[in-house]
Length: 511
Ligand code: FAD
Image 1 (tube, rainbow, N blue to C red):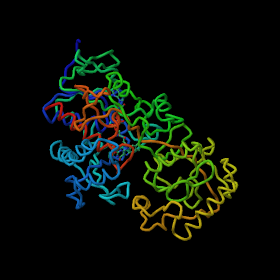
Image 2 (cartoon, rainbow, N blue to C red):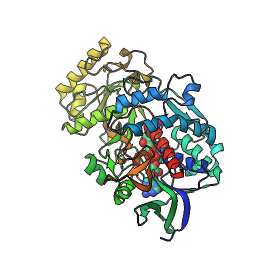
Image 3 (tube, helix red, strand yellow):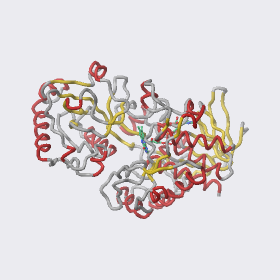
Image 4 (tube, protein in one colour):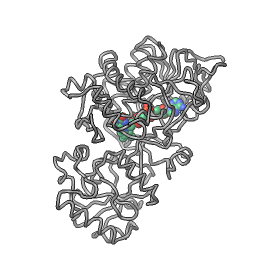
């Protein structure tokens, strides 16, 4: 094979996992090439809230959070169980604090803790969570690199102008990691460079990557290894239908040009073991007239019903669990359309966290928002049985009057109260008794798929024939079968596990 360039490490993708891996490489004195398929760095990670779940890290300790790796491990084991390899789970949990130290003290990314409750009532849970965030960074500090960073969903998918004078959340992570890589002098970062295939030598060892650029094909030699951190396949219609029976690949939160599932194809080509292909980081999402579906959480009032007009879950469940409830309804043949029903006490806006907020007029015109002066009329407008919907609302209003949701215990869990700033369950139960009622269409969305390569505790990709690993190939983030299996234990699990396993992968390449 004739190579165009040679590096110690080649990283495919430029989200949180990819850039953390690249930083681990340059910190070890290795050369690294990061290839990103689209015209912006950051992937879905740039859209994210930037919460990184790493139990027992020094930032939590600095902020007085009483936590430890063992407490985190207890919680993780309680929630995930044996669905994934316990040695890999331990490797992730034990390396989390190491990565937090590395990022702040070696790379120089200032970190802070922000409260965000864990998602399950299980031993080891932290009601204030164990999330850390990169501190916000100003556009001035970021400089011209800001134009290379994928902007947030409202700007990126809806063309809404956003204030980018201060980058926070996932934007801050991506900006800070890019700047550190630039400053290292050992990293090449290329946009519009799509990895098309992996190159293997006669022994089956992956030795490099073939990349498609505007100038043509480039063959990149990876002396130490290739880190596949190219995200998931949430935008791949065929894979979503075949593996997940999803009616649409547009309901995901990722950008249409990311989440293409290229990693899955490359992994299949080299005989990698794959798992959790039917899984995603699920969430409820508001369907917009342009076909995009936007992650929606923190419902301040109202109820969610299925096509029969019935409630089926605690609307304040952590979003992945609410998404799973939607998925179960779909699987039970209750349809794929859900309605968020609320009254007019909050004015014209959707009473929930959703960025961007939907425009009522445009939604109404598209048949995604209906309004009526009675629940019966609203039922007729959205095509659900009026008697059932009236009974559902009456029953919920009785719960609101009593301050207890006898059906789904809404507001009784700290997570449910968190976004509402509520102290009691009763504050989370607001009767639907206004003078006008609204119904907004919701669908099953996701924050990315979470099925892919099964990796070892060192991030190496296992072979499907059971004969060890695909030498030279590592994977992290949504290109892998998530270490958390079918559950989403706490805020920042996708980024946290991706960044840590990318770090471990590079450590293994260098060993
Ligand atoms: P990505 O960040 O998607 O990066 C993959 C990159 O690989 C993309 O840029 C893609 O274009 C590129 N790529 C794909 N194919 C190729 C190819 N062939 N060649 C080269 N490049 C390729 N998670 C958290 O942990 N904490 C949060 O606070 C959080 N908040 C969220 C908020 C929102 C609104 C959303 C939408 C998601 C949130 N998530 C959060 C989920 C999280 O952002 C994603 O699951 C995670 O970022 C995936 O990271 P990744 O590195 O695997 O992939």
